[in-house]
Image (tube, rainbow over all chains, first blue to last red; front, side, top):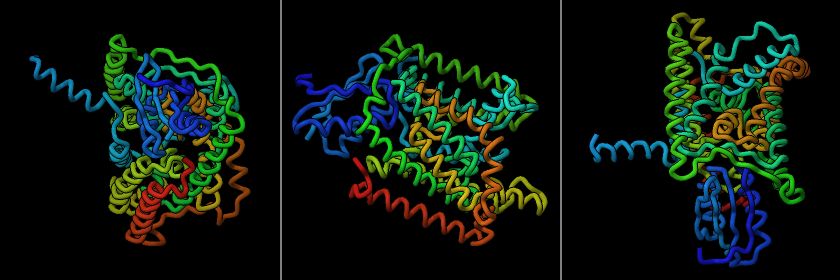
Length: 77
Length: 403
């Protein structure tokens, strides 16, 4: 990934809806253009996080799976 | 087997197990199976499973003087829910979604408390999101409508709490977490293999066990299939009540509406025709199936408590079962709270609570008795269309959604 992460939000072990609630809280503290990395282990996040980005207008830069951990990179708009 | 054929079968496998199914597909399939359960014996429910698990546990350890409790696998709902758990486990394995996910300690506490509240709500209000609501609306029960209002109130309040907790005490859901047994890359192929083996072993074992009891054999098979469908579609009734107030998305409510619409049609035909009964008295018993004396305050109180619990736990009676099967330890503790508190509430609280309520607060209302079958259907049609219009409008405008 050719960008710098400004903040990492660790949601490993959390199940729905906690990753979305945590993401909503953490992104408020960022400035527009800054990037958040969310780490999660809930398979539901694979659909929920892109859905949240579409809904809120924040940009999903990409996602990847690293073993058991799903990583999402989101740019605050 | 040549390569082309292999490719086709692989495609078929991927259709079912490479990614989550659309939620509404889950809703339609589950409603179809619910109608089948009613035709075979009695409709789908979740609370009875926890009661069966809890009463068997307490009998085993000699608490509360319980005796002559039916073993879990001989209790229709003990069996149905246990097989749903196994089905969800198998579905998660086949989709490579399984892992033991241990959350921070605060989440485990919330799981247990949520489960305990669901037990209290389901026993006081008579029914959970499945038996009381999904099957209850299909059964044309007046109390079931009030139960849904209770779920809505409870969900809204609990969601407010979760936002508050996230702002004031974010560390409550932070801390050490662990993930074990996840399917990693090519080495993770053990999961689908084990999932297939488990499915076959369970099907063979229960068809042999119930070779002389078709009803229980069908309950076992349908329970297993329900578990697979729930896990693959991630069908979630908490979401249906919560999302309009959270993200505003309408997918989950619409999936539940699809399940309700099909359930209502199927159940209405069975009830109207008195299917399975040859006498007028029997036909009345069929019509009154899953209509409980909880209209309206009883259902409102129970539903509100249940709504609080399911939102804090992150899964209703059945959502807890399939997530537990997928390996979410928070939901293991929700199930534990549910099964430990259900028998206690039934033995020590329900009677006193019910006696305290006046008769008008706990009526048994079968809507066709008051509105006729057409009137009852029209009422549910209006409710479903109104709910649909609300969630779509809210999705677009975000008026009620917090995110």
